[in-house]
Structure formats: C-alpha cells, structure tokens
Length: 381
Ligand SMILES: [Zn+2]
Image 1 (cartoon, rainbow, N blue to C red):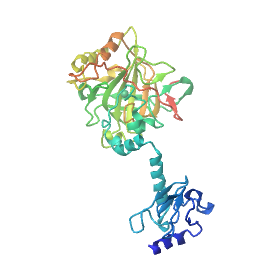
Image 2: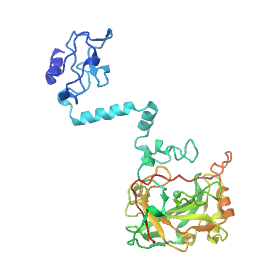
Image 3: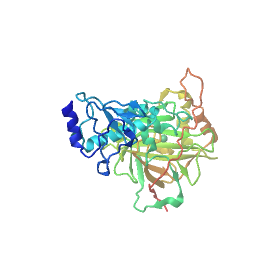
C-alpha cells in the first residue's frame, strides 16, 4: 500500500497533500496542474475532515469542491496519473457531462442508443401534443438537425439557378401494387425492385426509383400542406418518394445525403378539381382504418402532375421520424386543384384500427423547420 501511495505522490509532486483537519474544499491545483483531476491520496494513517466529518482515506478532488471515495489500492479503480492520456480525460469529461443531465434524459438516451436509427417504429410517434412533432427529437435526435423539412419558401430568399435542368418522370403503371392506411397517412406502394418507375433530371445526379406516394392534409381546407410558400399553407401536399439505386436498398439510401428524392405537389381547393384524383379517392372506403390495404394495380402517378414543371429545390429531411437528412426536395410551384369533397374524403380515414374507438386521421403534417444557412433554388425566374 505504501508503495502505491508513494508512486502517486511522486507523479504530482507539486500538488499539496491534505493534512489532518484540512478542508478538501481549500485544495485546488496550481495553474500548472489545472488539467489534472486527481488529488494525491493522503499518506497511510492520515485522516481528513470537513466540518468535523471524517473523510474516507482515498478521496477525489473535484473542481467544485466535492470529495468522493476512491477505490482502495489494488482494486480496479481509475488509472494512475501516468496512464491518464487525452483519451482518458475525454472519456471522463463525456461521463461527467452525461451525469449532469437530468436522470430522465440520461436513461432515455442510454436506452435508445443506436436503435432509434435502425427501427423508426420502435418509439411510437404521432401528431398530437404528447407524441407530436415538438416531441419527436426526444426519441429521434435527427429531428433537431440543421437540414430538417419542411421549410417555409419565401420568394425573397429563393435564388434562381439557371443551371437547373428540367426533371422527367417515366413511370410504369404496372409498378403500382397496393394502397394502404398505416394510421399516419394514405400511401400507394410501388414495385421498386428494379428501375421500372424512375425520376431523373432537375437537381438529381442520376435516376431515382419510385417507392411510394402519400399525402399530408389538415382538419379543414385552409391548412394541411407541410411546406409553406410565401405564407400560404395549402390544403394538402402529395409526396412521391424515390430512392437512389446506386445504394443497395431503400434503407441504405436513407442513410445517405443523396439517397432520397421527393417530388412534392401542393393540393389547392378549387372549382375545377383534378379528375385523376378519383382513382385514389375511390379506394379510400376500402382502407378506412389503420392496417387496412387494398390492391392498387395499373396506376401511373404522373397523371397527378400539374401542367408546369417549374420547381424549387433544396436539401432537407424526411418529414416523419426518424427524420433522416437524406432528401433532395423538388417542390412544384403549380398546385393541383382538388375539391372540398375530395379533401373531406381523405379526412374520412381513421388513424385507429378497426376495433378501436374512432379518431379521424387529420392534421398529419409537420410544422416548418428552421432553414439555417440552406439555399433554396428555383428553376424559374
Ligand atoms: Zn410526406
């Protein structure tokens, strides 16, 4: 034991050894030793007190003046001063920062770890106050990132990029498979096992495969879209989601900044509704509740496109957890027109399963996120 203690004292010879009766709080390292966190242990037989209280023989000096028991020599304790490299100091500082967090936060983070990134459905989320967009970041840390979507698009802040090319979609109607209600949206799923329905051009570096389309809508006609254009929130927003087949699969693509391309089309309530919406809306009755799906063969989603292909583009995220920042957004300037009845049809969906109390599936949109230093480019003047 004596050898061990002597070793410590030798390693930091200028640090004072507390003597009996001396308060731990009065001891601080000299400026030369400020980076060192460990006070030499007292010599065997010494006892120290704070306000008359006996301290354990092996105590740790903390900058805040806290004394904690150290493991006795021989037991597996912190490394000796000669072993404390940068890595050790870094590890300790991470630990102490973690300890400073409130316990609820600590345990959640530890429980989560990497699982949030892998399984987006591990922690339930929704659009209500208790599990809604303001809470998502707690279980899905990407949601607090700096490339989040949706955003507000303001003409003043958009810049015209003459180098932006027109975009093209070539969709195979035979790729459409099913339509489903997942309790969060109405979705049409496409076969994406090869390049049969693709989007290319525009800001995209290559072809992107169509995987699914879905909608976001409100509880009334005056709101429901996710992106906001010059202060205008449309009644709804259609998202056609594509992934970059240079990655091995969709999940892999979601981890890459150029992995996903979403073509977004606004739904505006008007007097001359788009008849092409009928095909989707007439299937709504078959998928009223969460978990229901129906076959949806032979559908070419390009029938939903507006006349103009003018667009805004920026880099952002998926707008539902885990909110990965992997999306090249292509947002069409011209909305498509839908009727109030068609919007009401979407609102007739339920977010509950068949045997549960009815909750209408409405307001499944995420509020706009800070743009930070991102540039929004326009393909038009
Ligand atoms: Zn969406």
